[in-house]
Image 1: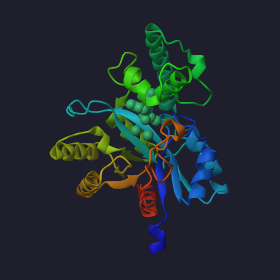
Image 2: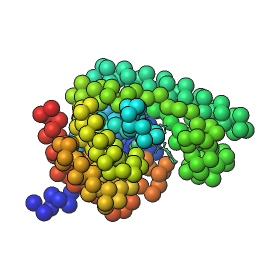
Image 3: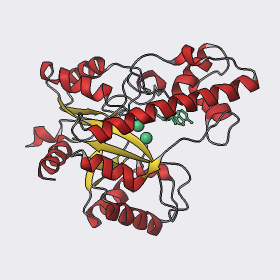
Length: 292
Ligand code: AMP
Ligand code: ZN
Ligand code: FE
Ligand code: FE
């Protein structure tokens, strides 16, 4: 049906439970207003936003799938990947104990890391306390610090705060604790979910052969999908990732990586304006969750 192909979804959305600025209710209301047919709230290391969205779903004409985004350590042989692999999980049981317990540990580790970053900022002369940042139910991260730095006049924008102080190799950077990617994939699969590599274009690998190898290795580790549709992917990248997904029998997903006011250039559902993820990808994903 032609009409169906015009119905959009967004499977990569951050809420106030992590570093987004809109609550799950507001995200659902906006999604409905925009005519989106399905969303997944994929907060960093927490299920509280996704659980809230699932509870609210029946009041909206938008389907909701459980989601999460977890940063993982690449295997040592993927030596050209400098940062983390971001693994999205979809359709898992939100009450699964090993997943919930691991994410609770991550919350504690995140708090410690934030404290260390704040100590480094203090040494530079910027005074922010952990209490300034934390609110209940939040998976606290560097964007919260960046926001506070802007509020206090220590940086003129969130991007500048990252570029000058909080980004990798900058004076207040502290490395993030990450599980090996194999463990993250297992954690999601054992909870009944589908693990998906988020925004592969952000890995900035130059050599197409190396991308092929990475996808092949991750598929061998149990990865089931890739987020080929992402606002920052060029059309060449999109075509390339669609081809690789087909070669390695991976599902295709897509999402905007909406964070609200923290990333004001990225809109829910439509990303940079022209971004669109068809509902058929959601149907295919759900079919595979129920059969996996
Ligand atoms: P954390 O979980 O504390 O490592 O923070 C990761 C978050 O910071 C992600 O949601 C990114 O979108 C955001 N982030 C990372 N680098 C930058 C940057 N250079 N400018 C703005 N946001 C960034
Ligand atoms: Zn984020
Ligand atoms: Fe990410
Ligand atoms: Fe994200």
